[in-house]
Image (cartoon, rainbow, N blue to C red; front, side, top):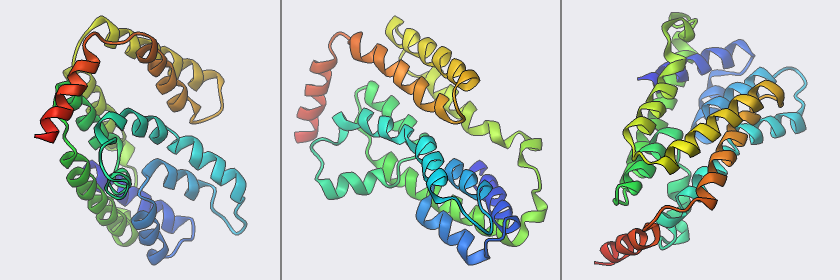
Length: 222
C-alpha cells in the first residue's frame, strides 16, 4: 500500500512538472525506480540538463550494484537470461527479504520474482491514481508514508541474524552514511554507507560461510 501511495505522489508530481499522463505512466512502467524518478522529475523543465540528470540518477541507483553483488552466491548458477530477468525486478524490499533468508540457509529466488512483480504493479497503479486523482494525496509525508520503507528495512535488519560481525557492519555503515549525508553531495550517503559496511564483511569473514554455501548448492542440485 505504501508503494501505491508513493506512486500516486509521483504521478501528481510528474503532472505538475508538465509530463502528460501517458508519459508519467510510461516512465513508471519502464524505469520502476521511485527515488530516481522523483529526482528526474525535480530536474524536468523546458530545457533538460541530460548529463547532470544521468549523474544524479546513477548516484541514487548505484546501490543496486552492491545489492546485485550481494546476491551473486544465490544467482551464480542461474542462466544469464533468468539472472538478469530477476534483477530487473530487484527492489530494496524483496532484496532485503531474499538476503535475510539466504543468511538463514534458504535460497528464495521466488520472492525476488513474485515480490518484484507485485511491487512493479503497485507502482504503476499508484502512478495512475496520482495522475488522475492526485489531488486526494497532496502530501504523503504528512501521513508518515515516507517512513514506511525505512521502518520495513529496519525491521528486517533487527529480525535477521545477530552476531558481533553483523552488529559492527551495521554500526560502521550507519556512521559512514551519516557522515556522508552531512559532508558529501546529495545521495552519496547511500553508496558510502553500503561500501563501509561491505568492507567489514569483506575482511571479517563469518566462520562456516563457505560450508553453508556448499550445502545450499548441494540442496539446490538435489
